[in-house]
Image (cartoon, rainbow, N blue to C red):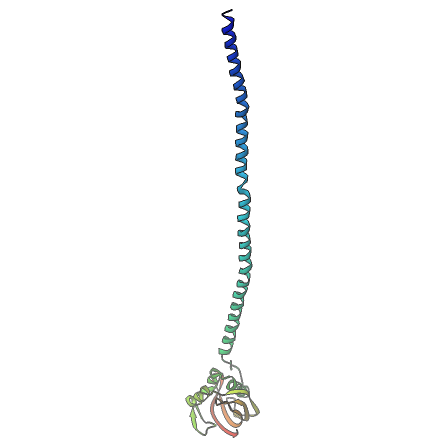
Length: 221
């Protein structure tokens, strides 16, 4: 009987210990689940923030791309305008090509060059040993004649020959008589309408006609 009582006490204590271990094990097994849920919550929380921060960046890129297109268009317009201006300047600067022209054609080209202030074209037509009498009743050489054209500041509405008569003296000499009319505005702002009578002598030199002598008289204006 003495042996049974201590044995029962030992069994009772062992049973209590076993019951405590079983009650503790569900709590411990539940803990990892809680930690996993907490961990999952922590991982999912930043997702909306990332989407919110990405959306404005995408909108900014789209706005930047949209604003870049007009800028490129403006640049293209400036380049096109620059190229057009350059082309016009080049065209204006290029002198008239008088190669192959006869005396009558050169007389018409002369008047056209006066209205456009194309000094280079007239320079091709006047011979190095040119002599003449200007419309200002002065004796002139090549330098004087070219200086008169170069210093002309008038603005021309029209300048053309109204009558030309070409007389050939052999294959290399031609005398042209004619009348020309020039209409426009002087450098003083006053309108003018001038008429001239002229006699020009042309000579063929090295396959090219050049004016070697001229006399001009202003009869109107």
